[in-house]
Length: 216
Image 1 (tube, rainbow, N blue to C red):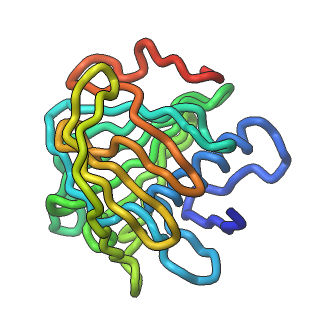
Image 2: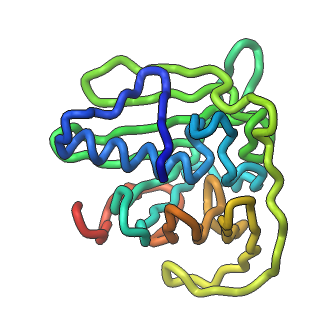
Image 3: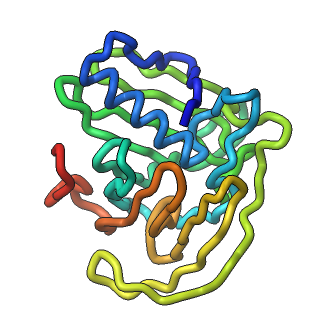
């Protein structure tokens, strides 16, 4: 992608080690999600801002990567309520298991009912063995709130269930499928530089149980 990534508290390992490579791939995936600020050409990320949150207590969704690079699997969960500088929101948690490191998390405190650039009050990086690192208002910059364009509504069977799906398009050739049945971000499938699709979802229990993607 050619994206130079700089996030407070997160510096990809430049030694070429496996852990550093996986963390870098995770960071690139999150740029594709619109979940980490891209510094490429000084522009805001052209990605998945503006989609409604699916607020199901204890809800989670697990995704498998379908692009040549990127973490093989990751989980998005809906967390509890939180507060930052007097403003309230809900935590949305993105997790990835990294060999020899453990479970790495990017947590986002989101105000309102949509995952938007202005609505993300705080980003918290969790790496085992290190204190959490917070970045306030990571996407609040001019031009960051890109609006998706609805294309069509369809019905698909994924993760063993029939889902009502709305497809959206974004600048840069990214398309996203969203369903009100899928907890947290509602994502079903994303196509673009980094592509992934829903593998399983539910409420409660361990979202990593029965994970099948290669590399786990």
